[in-house]
Length: 400
Image 1 (cartoon, rainbow, N blue to C red):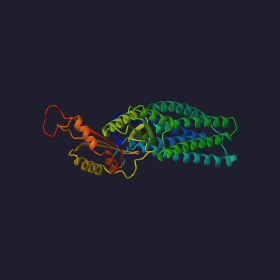
Image 2 (tube, rainbow, N blue to C red):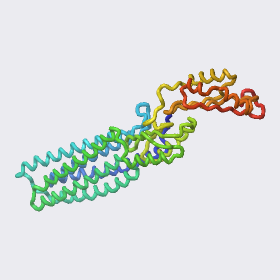
Image 3 (cartoon, rainbow, N blue to C red):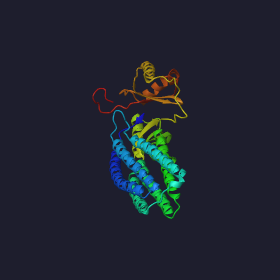
């Protein structure tokens, strides 16, 4: 028995807010990057600073990554459809993977350029002071952009936006390296400018590798971390009626996770009560912001340990045997409750109400009915008999 329904409104609200924040912070980043890139490349070219040009290429990579983020953000907010029953949140993860690969490629390219320039030591031209001005300007604006983007991203807890914010911080770090290289170059150590360019390349490639690897893990159904899983287990156990939780499994989809769990309930309650407990437990789990949806399975026993024997008779065959047995005594069963447990079959028989039956008559009937023989026929562990009570007022026929 499973309990499952659609994502609740809070999740939709969250994703709407997330989209708005993604747009706002990404457009800010696009604006800053366009201005800085044009400055870096033109001034870098005229002032002969390879590090500054490398940083300009880095800003271009940021621009491309911003556009990837915008596209992925739009795509991931699509509603679930026939092709993607769980929604499109994974698009963000794919975008992060793409972003990572892009950064690795840019970083390796920068390293290569710096390497060829270092090999040709004699021809490194002197760097002009204007390059330093631009590098410092870039440093300040990128750090400011990082603070703004991180604040926004943490508010909506989006891995992709947090990645993009750190991306801006790494730009600030590389601009710092560039500034140091330019200062060295101005003081006559011309070697420092290409070395700075190489360090920038390494930083960019390393960051791309980290993002890409993380995204790859999430795409291969990585579980939530242990603290998050423990929180979910606590929520399930807090539900009255849940005796235990086993087979709790989680898998990431985008920034949220899907949860599957088995809950243990009293085996003798009704199906509808078991379902009610599961549904309530599910709603509790959904209060955790990290959960996109949960599927709760109800178990009468811990099925990791105990299973009902495979060859227990079906309900229909149980009913046939009971009816045949009771017909000999001129009574019929109004209700049958069959419990399939690892200890075997338990059977509760409720006899139809009988206006003429009194206590003595019933007691005598129970003595006559051979419950041991019935148990043996059914292969049951226990059989109980009870009688429906008929209302004192004579109602419509057929109503007890």
